[in-house]
Structure formats: structure tokens, C-alpha cells
Length: 123
Image 1 (spheres, rainbow, N blue to C red):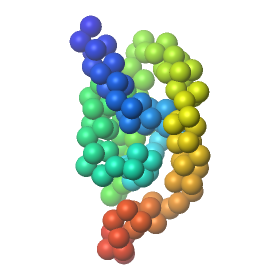
Image 2 (image 1 turned 30 degrees about the vertical axis):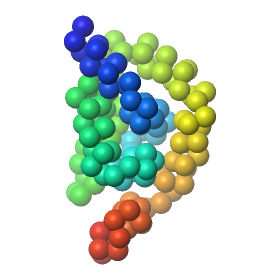
Image 3 (image 1 turned 180 degrees about the horizontal axis):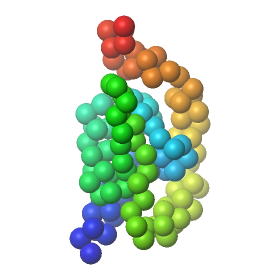
Image 4 (image 1 turned 30 degrees about the horizontal axis):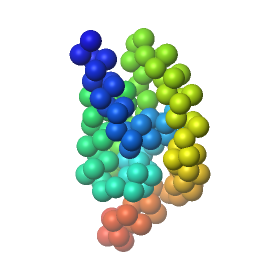
């Protein structure tokens, strides 16, 4: 029961639900893409992703200096993800997120990083 509560608590935040919806659409997103989507600081995005990872909803992999996140559906959670997909996909916020993500994923990681952190980020 504790794990179920941890999952539900993780999904109770609007931004974390938005990230789960985005990762349902894209196989994986870079940390800078998540930050740009949510329009929050890198530290805030990292905190949200840590909560989702602790709940077992999201996994990550590192590729050099880049961190990528992907859905990691816990065993038996498929009905939850189906319900989330049906519920979130009708949300205007999620529809707007998908439009924003088309632009965000179309940018190179370096350009996105420069936009967020300045020229010194990615020489």
C-alpha cells in the first residue's frame, strides 16, 4: 500500500503529471527539455524528476553531460497509465504542452541549454 500511495502522491502535482504525459508521448526527454516545458528552474525540475523516480514512475540515463528521462511503468500499473492517458489527453494544458514540445524537441540540446543558461553553457 505504501508504494501505491507514493505513486499517487507523485502524480498529485500538476507539473509532475504534465511530465508523465509528455513522456507518454516521447520515449525520452532531456532534463533541459523538461525544464523548458515546465518553465521552471533546473533545480525545481530536478526535484520533480527525483520524486517521480523515487515513486518508480520515471527512469533516467546519463549520456555525457546530458540526463535523459523515460517512463518506467511499475509492474501492475498499466491500468493507472491507461487512466492517466485518457484523463490527461483531454486537458488543454497537456494539449498546449504537446505543441510546445514539438518546438522544444526540434531544438538541439546545445541551443536549448544556451537559451536557458547563456552562451557559457555550451561553448
